[in-house]
Length: 107
Image (tube, rainbow, N blue to C red):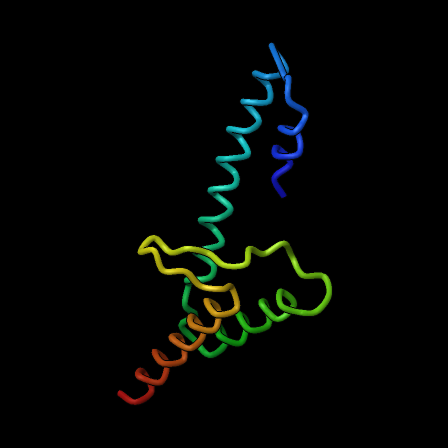
């Protein structure tokens, strides 16, 4: 959750409070980018074993349950301007992991 937006609504921040606000905005921006990067890495990391695929499926199951869902974005954008909904991205990664395992078994 980005609380800075709620704080911005209270315009008229001046002096030391404004400087502190700007410092906190910069820190939350850095944290937000790091969190987004970590999320993209998580979504795009393909399991390399059947046990890894199972672990990923078990990990994401509660993320898409009807209750207690985390604050996931509706979708995320890739660097090549493509975008995907979160469940779609996980399904793609799982599918690719299974394909890779099948190729290994066939050789």
